[in-house]
Image 1 (cartoon, rainbow, N blue to C red):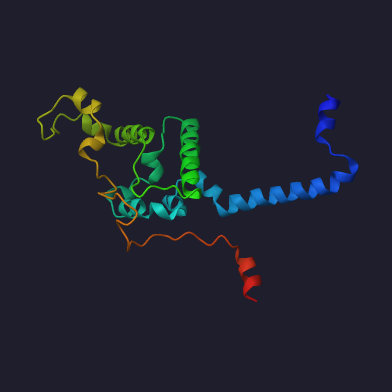
Image 2 (image 1 turned 135 degrees about the vertical axis):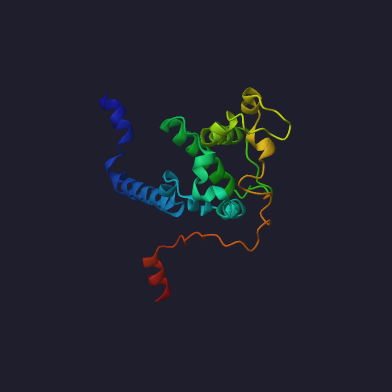
Length: 194
């Protein structure tokens, strides 16, 4: 066991430099978490989705929808069957979004992926499932069987809920959305402006 530990301990003349390098790496990691607002992704706050400015059309359309009073982004776009699934899906999807945004590979038209479609559909049923079993509610086809209504996808008929017909980054050019804060800390801004 001692041999394994010795592999990771640098020679005495390198210790100072190794400590400095580890300190710099640790500082950069903390700065990365600060700049990316990593702590905000643990919350259910809708403004978190605005950390990337490309989500402005989705945020604006949600903000002006009837869902705003009852559901935030995570209510629809994250699974709620258990806590592990919720945070695993959030981490996986968030990492994909962060990678696309960081590498500047965001598409002009933002579309939901298959895994996201399944989650959104299951969350529609979680909140509105009682409407599917109410026989007084008959759709425009005259389809009154509950089995048929449960098997169809909600977004087939309600595809513009709650985001409307938003398809591109330029669809709401004058929308007012919360802007991300500057990555430069206030104390550093004061030092720079002196």
